[in-house]
Length: 338
Image (cartoon, rainbow, N blue to C red; front, side):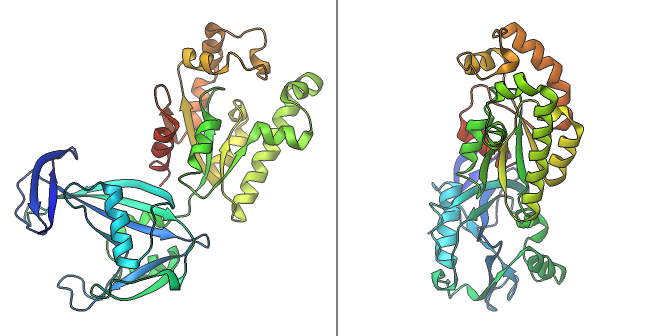
């Protein structure tokens, strides 16, 4: 007999369990379900059609999902459901949890949380093994086709899950030097099918000069011109289907032209840290021309305050990094870009 854990309103396990589909839940009791898609590099993913013998929504189109069994984690559940329903193993795929939502239906005794997942891997028809007792058919679709099915009222849960069908934006990580942009960008590669673009490194490679040498020979305005040209290239690449996690230079937000482009094609994520944390991260780095002769907490704090309002005015999301590992920060970012 399959059982589900019972959660409280804060999505914490109560220690109690219920029999699957036994809709006699008390007020304030919830169970947990999962839904997920597996998107290919061409932007398409598989959806399945419910068998006509279903008592609810027979013949409707849907994505993989189901209830989380007692003792099972949310991620284990979605991996199991996808394997059972369409035969794909997503345990090593990029992606993961992108957001959660809650529903209360006290008149039906059915209160639940839904964790929504998005995975990225390439597969084709021969890789699919459908659960024949549950599925009458399948097809590969893109987001537009899902929206069309939803308009015809043929697609389940659309209003609640439509965010996962949207194209992921470019991700621009901004923040003061040492806030963790580079390390977080590398971690995000484990979640999203993106390339990492380090702005300062790209400028060094394109100009064949160190940042400090560019500042010394040509001045800051010249360097800012190089940044602006690179931001324009990133937008052009995005329009041609190339997606980046961009680790921005600390001063890229100084120019409004840059920030307008960044917000037009992406999500701007501000990573923050205390002056003390910044100092510990950059104190041994000799390639920070703005800190030359001023490598101390007091000066770093002063410089951070000068840019604080500008950073916050540009950011779509602000994520503190003090005391967090890069995996935790990356997961927070993924859950804020949809």
